[in-house]
Amino acid sequence: MSHAKFIAALTVTTALGVGGASAADLAARPYTKAPAYVETVYNWSGFYIGGHLGGAWTNEQWVNSANTTAFGDLAPGQGFRQRGSGFMGGGQIGYNWQANNFVFGVEGTISGLDNSGRVTNTVFGVGRDDQFSWRSNVMATIVGRAGYAIQNNLLYFKGGYAGVNNRLSVVDNLPPSTGSGSQTHWASGWTVGAGWEYGITRNWTIGIEYNYAAFERQTYQLAGTAAGTYTFDAKPRDIQWAVVRMNYKFDAPVIARY
Image (cartoon, rainbow, N blue to C red; front, side):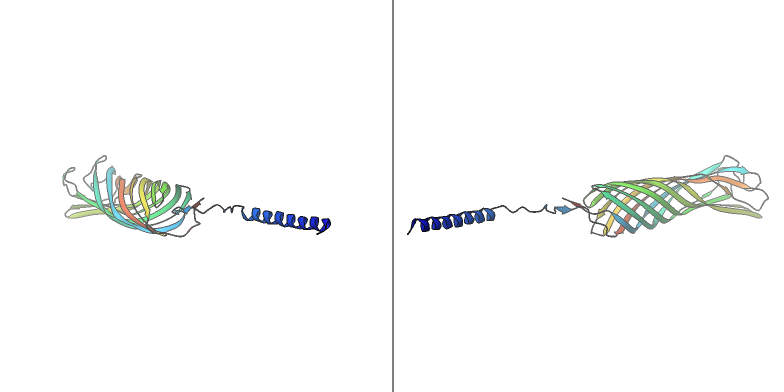
């Protein structure tokens, strides 16, 4: 082989070797994955609607403020206080926002309750014949909520407006004449409460809740058969209730951690 042919063969061999090494170097480069999707947290965000059932306790108070007739045995400044309890149930609708573990929301409720009572006056007056009765039967709330979520568990506080439909009646049974009267008012007030909610599925949640509400004083005009007025300042001093709740939560954008 001539000297020129030897140099040419050596050049080709070297080039092939360098190319093979370069290919090997490319094949050996490590593969880098994209950031992995780790895990979704339970999603409390979005609209929900549901119902509640439990018990309620009402402290009712009424005081005579203007007795200008012979109707009734209570003089101004005299009155009664009574406690009544019963079942309550209704529905709720609301919306939640979630930021990491913190959950904020607004909620409205409407409930029916059968808290009532009756008092026969055996303390004041001569005839002791007044029969007073009262009833709180419908309550509504509009509240804000703030809570902390630990996966499927949500612990929260709530507070805002409360209103209740309250009725006061009296019968003065003193034969041969009988006087009677009644009036109903919507009493406004405030409420606070706390609860625990648990996500049993993606869309269904259950929970328990306790609430306290206090209300304003209203003037009730209980007119009798005699001319004039029989006027009381009355109010539900407070209503407390404890309920079991169930909600259907509509799907919302998924909250994820990376």
